Length: 403
Ligand SMILES: Cc1ncc(COP(=O)(O)O)c(C=O)c1O
Image (cartoon, rainbow, N blue to C red; front, side, top):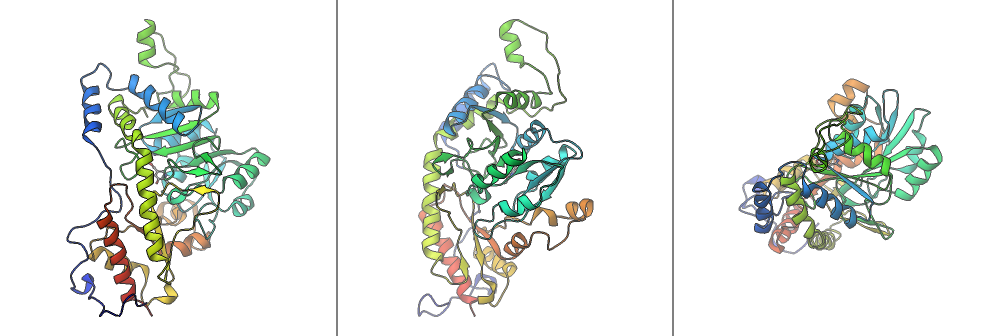
């Protein structure tokens, strides 16, 4: 590919000058002075762990995603574990998920002693393919865990239909998709349980943190107990009622999100709309620039979907290039662009191969995509100069490897 008639610049990986002097990370949090002050105020208050800020954060979060109940957790992974428990997963059960995700989505099934089953993804969005999901249903299937890869909601209409027909619980891993909309409705209000993460690279952060959303009051009650050792009431409730008596009714964990960071979450949530807008602008600029390069395949956005742009993953048409993804990755890093890869298909991790005998070829679409994927920097604090640097570096590297 030739973008201009100018002489190609030597790549940084070959000793040329990098596009940037310092590394641009692929994701980064934005924390304001107001956020810091809110945390400091809690440190001076009576409640550091489960206090008024937890309830406030849960309430405004539930309202933001149009769901009845929000239950906070110490991480997205803990939230997934609680959802898997609440769905009733147990040894002998199977739960179907996508391999194009972070390992935690499948690990939460293992925590319950159940078996994760991987169904392939569709080539456009790299989200769970409902047809392949249906093929992999057995009499032991109890739940499905679609993932909103990169912030693009999964094919929820089809997944909900199949699940309703078969009596399966749907747990949506929306750790990438806070603020996304699907057919006009907020992600968080669409399935039995929806899970979000507040890891620093996400749309809002509490450092570590997660949330499960549900409209089912029984699920909400179980989720609250599960995060609190399986105990039926919280210390603050007992104190306000002047009671000491409590009962442990199920085997839970300490998965509580402290008041200290819920105060941060409340402040961060106020900035969500701005963060989503900025991420959308960055995605639009990338798409406009890269759809001009024939060997770069930009992410698809399906009709009726408003994605949340957690990641901006591009795929390379390797037939049009003289090199592979690994070399492009190294070349972009040398230009000081902090690219990443999302994801190694989960079933191909050594643990999953070793424990369950998974092999290459089980999910061909996900595996082929993995060989061609690179995630470009995407975070709401990126400046226009940062975005321009990424566009310049990708164009420089790809033109140097074009056939
Ligand atoms: C798709 C997906 N699921 C689950 C998780 C786990 O969330 P956490 O890091 O908050 O435990 C992540 C994490 O980043 C994720 O990207």
